[in-house]
Image 1: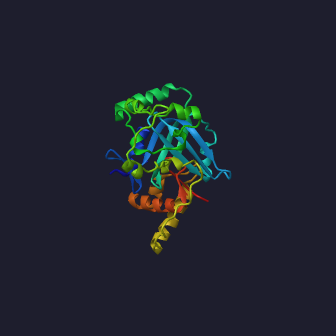
Image 2 (image 1 turned 90 degrees about the horizontal axis):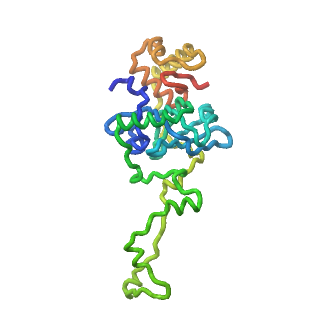
Image 3 (image 1 turned 90 degrees about the vertical axis):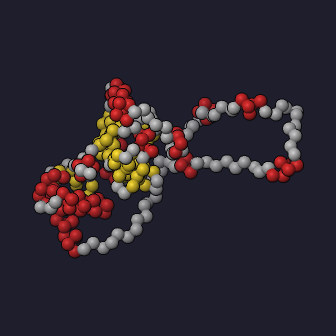
Length: 277
């Protein structure tokens, strides 16, 4: 696979993203490896922690909803967003505790709703009609009825056969002794996914990383120095980093991944790297 493919923001229905399989560092959607996604969607929910170190929004493109999360300085990316805003969202695909979510890269507000219609027509042509994700029962807080009226409106209809068997007031339905003795109260359970909210997630538990070799530490320090020297304020271009480092693309990508995993560098925008001071 071409390494440049990892930097492409691919257009998919959010329902396809939700049904994809996350393995390693990418999402597999219908045999396609997806690292980044571009979607035009509506902000249907927003949460910001009290200390302003964590924020999350829920995006809806008409096929499904997905959560987007941000930490620390990236929280500001959500500051100008309100519930109901239509946005053009470019995000990196991430996964935590079985939930696929998006980390923001670029977000722009859309004023003309015709762009949403145009994107849906484009997706129908590229990907076909959106698939149903209800079978996954991946419920989020915004999917649940918020009022009594909503709950009544979403209550499933009772089949006619069951309605005809309803007991008439004053009458008793005969029950055999065997049925009465074996009858058990129905236990109602709330789906575990419905318990999820936009509260700040627990810290991930990571296994201790192996101690890097001396030459690996030197290479990492050298690359950090290169990134700093090329950063004019908005990050250093990945191609310039590779050129100035004197290393191969594969070597630089491997070192960058390690630095990003440790939180030493991050990606403020596509193809740009910045040292976390």
